[in-house]
Image (tube, rainbow, N blue to C red):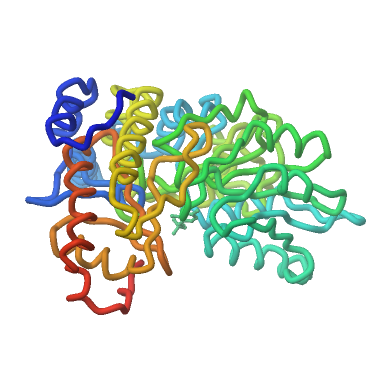
Length: 426
Ligand SMILES: *Cc1c(COP(=O)(O)O)cnc(C)c1O
């Protein structure tokens, strides 16, 4: 990108040149506010809203017949949306299903693919991984009678921010049965080289999967091409499907026919599900990893929000996201060093996801001061301010205003008016 000069005019010029600018109108933006938290909870679009209203209308008018007569029929909704999400993860249409939630899908997939045998009894992850993922992996080991203290191997971070791929590869010993890693680390925004890690894991006979909560909708993936075994994600962050909306998962087709760890009737072969037989026969697709009845009202928003992704295209979204975060970083670079801000995410395009991880000793109070100015950041204990300019709805001018606010909050000592305790959420 051209050299950032720090003027608001330059921000406005970048907005005028932005080919994705029109998508902003599709979203409910905060009144007089700037939303920089779309990596925690994406904003509501009119498309998502309309999809929920349609679902309610179909429920009102069709009752039980919605399972076959709704558009698309509720019975095939998870498969239909899986097909549409496949483009975002580089999967074949039948390798993706929309169902469950991040943590439930993790349990589902790890219980399917973790088979401790002989000396291969351990699970490999990283020490910076999200707490829910850690708890879930611990309980998967406990269910097999294994002690997490010994059998959950945590790759160390050298600097508390990022995990080096070389260190992960060095930890792929013949004691490891399964590897589960985040695609993008939630705090530092580091993007792991999933292709390289998949290749290295497979060279050692280890099954590997990724948590894509912080990458889906922000970064393209090519799971079929890479041969990755499995992946899972939520749809409420970059995908804007609403708080607690249903998640998604990917299973490579070579595993079709494998019995899911947690079987249920929605994973049964679809053409005969209502034969109601007691012997389980898995669907010949990722659909086999569904458990129970589709959560209709928390799946419906995706029907609308995915339309926006299909129109914009993930490659254009990624290109703009990289330009926006680069722009933000260059503005931050221009702030006087005495203000105390430093950038904690990797700078290299190939190594970062969709947010800037800004560090400051006064992060708690700065976040409160930003909120008082109606700028919504995301605080991560103890010193990280996550800022996510979202390609579909944030402008360059909003980025400029956010960085100006960061400057003034310290220069005018605005943060001193706030208490140092953090809130319950974040
Ligand atoms: C957001 C997020 C989760 C959330 O899990 P849910 O089951 O959807 O509550 C889990 N893992 C990571 C890495 C996340 O970013």
